[in-house]
Image 1 (tube, rainbow, N blue to C red):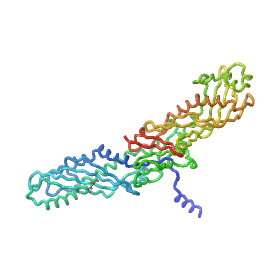
Image 2: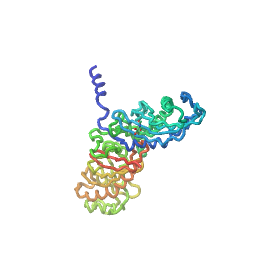
Image 3: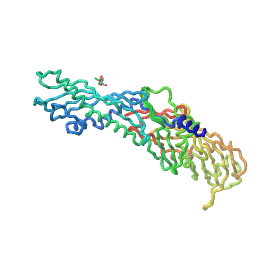
Image 4: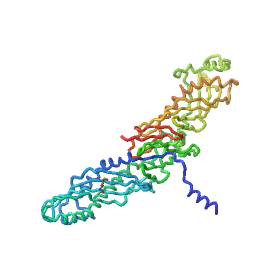
Length: 453
Ligand SMILES: *[C@@H]1O[C@H](CO)[C@@H](O)[C@H](O)[C@H]1NC(C)=O
């Protein structure tokens, strides 16, 4: 029985994953886009238009008939992070309320007001998405002016208006706050939806936990799910180290961090496509890919093939590709076999000359195109090469280093570049334009410094 208890306790105490595969920090710059949301959604104007109409539950203003709301001022929204809670929002606006007064004349009330609310940041239990929910909406009257005749006692009128407006305005204005939040929440509705990586599989940005709010940003931790087309999930390596924030980031700015472990998992989707067979004899600046050229490095080839034959080279990547990152430099490690064949005539299968176990590194350069992370590579180093089999007898692998290095650079890298063009999807949220992001390679982490239009 004890082991069950221990199991339960352990699963309760240890977080699902200590190192997030991806991590997002939203600073005030991104949050201020909520202002745009309010403008775009024309919430207040709609409220004003509706205000004149009789709606169930809306209290009439006593003594005023034919009520209309017009000239809603462009709202000014200010926001502050509330650590551990979410965002405090204040919408300052104003409007003119018109109507027929109990004295019979036309009446205008010019109100300036603040609507304040706490937008609590939660995680929707059903969808797993981050969600803002407003609490404690209040309307604060900043000023109230009327065109009522001066013979009426202003104090009494003001007192009357004040209490009446306090009763009426929250019902009128607070739905605006909610409507803005609905609008914002919609902007990350597809955040955790599976996004395709070509035909190879999908990537899903699943939230690790409820987003956290600090005095200067909101942090969203992701445990990304990388899945092959067949449905198998690629596990993120734990030993590779999770995404970590560099110390020197600008206050109020926003970043997306992708860990080397996550990029490694994404590249696993492409592993099969890194296997290639090259049959061309003329490739770029390379000497002709024939047994004659090869005989220049391994004389025994000339004995076996006195007449020149075209070469066929097959590369098979037999370990998952691995991404590593050190400040300013990222590498892609590839382990596999390189087999060279001599072609024969008339559809006869080519003859294997030798198989080499190889380990080589590609230097990765990252960029962003639309909502995808792009990688381009160049050969960094051929790290090791050892003969596994040979039909032409033993030879010194060292002699082939230059030949194989040139082959990888000229013939193999272009294939890899083609495969990588598919790009890796970035989280879909708040209509983020990743094109403007500035990229930084740090320890185990790719940092995208998000810039807004
Ligand atoms: C209304 O909001 C503005 C902007 O946040 C603030 O400067 C002002 O003090 C507020 N007024 C009242 C009466 O709360």
